[in-house]
Image (cartoon, rainbow over all chains, first blue to last red; front, side):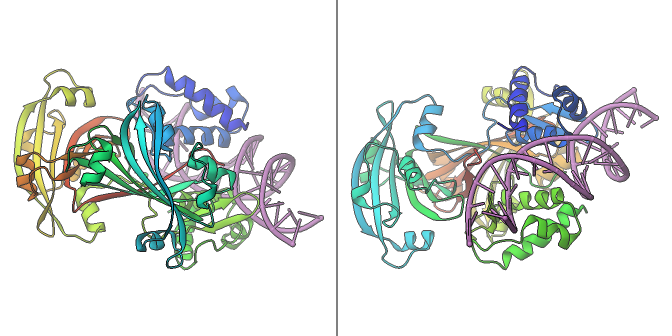
Length: 233
Length: 233
DNA sequence: AAGTGGTCTAGACCACCGC
DNA sequence: CGGTGGTCTAGACCACTTC
């Protein structure tokens, strides 16, 4: 455990007890209190600023953030983590596991050879036993063969076991009307609105590992995140 | 212009000429080349990592990222900026500017007093002259009075003129079916899918400035962003 | 073992804010 | 003016990868 992590953890607790716009002790104050250098203090504070818990005002101080609603910045989460954090108990029903040749879209997204063999998994994702999303994931077979897929384990665990941890994903979100097959599976009226998410997952080293599509029930699922302006002021 | 910004700009150009997974010169190399300290080099590189242009591998090096499609992290943009970056020419048609009492939702979102007077603006947003989104923004009247709203200027410019630059926004995205009035305005079939975005905008100091709702045409608008795992490894 | 990024120190000066 | 955060330096040692 590094010093800035210890400090960041401490500050998180401190900030939790503070009200909005209340000032944090100054950086120079914190460095003597914790017996660390200012760079270390700043690294810890920077972390909390990224999390939306603090904000800096040049020349004035560092202050507690204002919103406790959904302060978090967007993070890569699995369906399981996502549902747990929303207070649902996740489960899933595997609809099919098959060997397919990559579609043109997958070839482009994952930069594959034309018609490369892939493993495709379709799952119905449930929250507290009710359909929440329909998911289709396509993975180059050289990363995961059909016969190696373990229906009882999470996909990301299986990636991790192969040293293919998905670290970064690019997502595209769109509103669509459910076709009848999708609506059926999700328990939605035909033509009901769905949140359609396309995802390309890659490892920390940029290896493109998975191409996923998910259709979330529009009436049960929403997606939250914070955005900021890039320029500092 | 600070040194790390100069370096970051230089590195952005360099990275643009590199192919995926190609190694960047080492940090120690860059510090002698540019005559700066290692901390400065790391600040510049850190910036580019945040932008998705580079990634670090502890013990091995820093490398060019892999995707040129939509590498950017989510940023706060105005409709105007958003459309321009997609290659459309934005315009808008003001539907109404009115004085309203804050709805329960707005009161909660902006932490207002009950029934506080607000200015509400409804606009149809166009891209290349075609309807793209319907937008409704509610602003406490103490920030912007109805009679002070300038229909010819951008809303964010008017905020800026009052030192109320929106720096951070929390958004919630959902798929909904358009009601008939909305569908009419957007030129959509009744019940067509819309991307519904709720936004709470705040200044750098956390002052809650605006509560907005936007309905984007599902068939013309999508929303892209990258996410990463939070833990470093 | 050599080279890389990750953490950390103990300073310094600058830019900005509030009194 | 004093205090604050923002930038920068010139080191040091650690952890990790590669050979």
